[in-house]
Amino acid sequence: MRIIAPALALLALGTTPLPAQSPSNVPPLYLGADLSFANEMQDCGAVFRYQGKPVDPFELVKLKGGNLVRVRIWNNPTRTHYSNLADVERTIRRAKAAGLQSLLDFHYSDDWADGDKQNAPAAWVGLDTAGQAKALHDYTREVIDALAKADLTPEMVQVGNETNPELLSGNKKIIDWARNAALLNAGVRAVRESAAAANKPIRVMLHIAQPENAEPWFAAATAAGVTDYDIIGLSYYRKWSTEPMSGLGDTITRLRERYHRSVVLVETAYPYTVAPINGAHSLLGPDSLDPRYPATPKGQADYMIDVTQIVVDAGGEGVVYWAPDWIASACKPPVSANWENATWFDRSHRWEALPVIDFMNRPYVARRKAN
Image 1 (cartoon, rainbow, N blue to C red):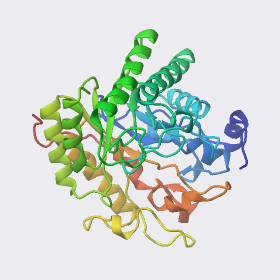
Image 2 (image 1 turned 45 degrees about the horizontal axis):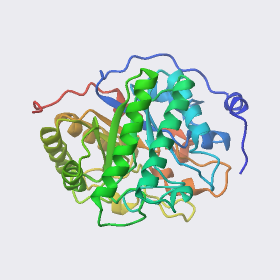
Image 3 (image 1 turned 90 degrees about the vertical axis):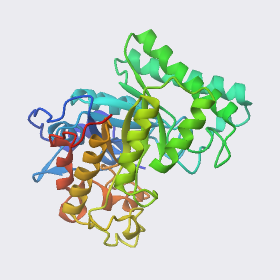
Image 4 (image 1 turned 60 degrees about the vertical axis):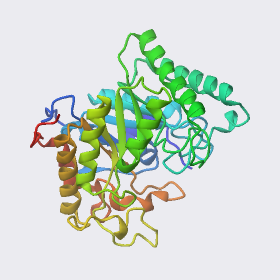
């Protein structure tokens, strides 16, 4: 893998600074993107364009009304030089320079953790529950303290990513809630301690994939004593969810009413095409489509506008697009081909920004009063 030093990479991009533009949304409505791939893609030669000119994706989010960047962290990634603490520091620094807030997403794994698997980091595999809880606490604390020391404290932190299965337990489906609660609470406690030490507010998020899974999970978590969090995070992909958009909105309303917490749609995406990409299988193919939204640039944009409006109508506090930056680059293997059709940039037009970026710049107002 070809790696360019960060400073040289930024010079090589030749990006043109974007003019400041006031976002049309007002906090606490968070609108933005997960830009965890941006550093790697740009180091590998990828160029994002807006109106035909190279553009910094962080500045583009700000220009288009966004206010939040999400970034993942893996404990000890072995297949990549990214998604580690150094990469996270670089991402949050870029976000901060663009005037954006940051959401740090702990996967508590050396690789992907998601709604199907929660593999423990290799260094923690042999530990018992108490040992893993201590390791998780200490690691969380060390990371956030290091960011605070660099003046990069994130405004929000996810204690786990799509933690539908039991934390650190592979693909185990039946959750041991005494163990799961001990692990989750250890992470939350570490965030609270770091926030107090830095004298900086940090909101804690717990994150579940697909709205139909959220209510039973949070009911069980509450019964097990997992109660010290600020935000419920949801993923919603039509391909993997049994709920239509209306069901997503109803779930958000019920979660807010029952738990009195903010709810953010922290992952969603939609394809602008389903045409084949050099023989690669697109993760969001024809089976991911809502019949009302064709796989076109306009269909992608309409989907994001409508799903954001539904979140706002239900009293939700934000929408984050997943991996709009995962475009083709010179690095190998070219795994981005699986996601290129769901980014914010058109592969058929030199990675020119698509209309979907304007979903962040609309003056969303709830069409009905949220309870």
